[in-house]
Image (cartoon, rainbow, N blue to C red; front, side, top):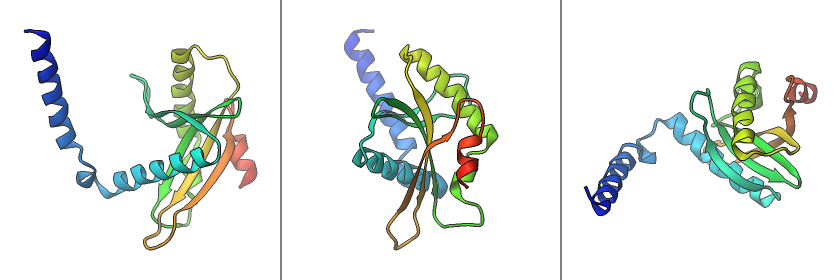
Length: 156
């Protein structure tokens, strides 16, 4: 098979994949999550973050890093939680001990992959998308640490 045929086959396979994952065909909760991540991305950029990765995954790890970006000299691993309404439990509380452990593991892989030795932290952005209203966005800088769940718990 020549190089041209391989690239044509690859292009055709990618087109078939795109057909499978059209945004309008996703379940509502996944569309809401994607919209929240898009809004959080723009919010963080407007507030001085330089985003260097979106939806970063490492094979063999649970979860993903929604956003990774620089805030001044600090590398931030950013978890985005989106809700369509305010419920009894705040969206940021969904970043529980198990989720934090998953995020720490993926972040360690990211740092190894980047060969980075820099100051880093975990931020959480909540986005509420009530129908007919402007999105409500809240940023929790340094929401939890590399060791414990202390940061967010203290603020709540």
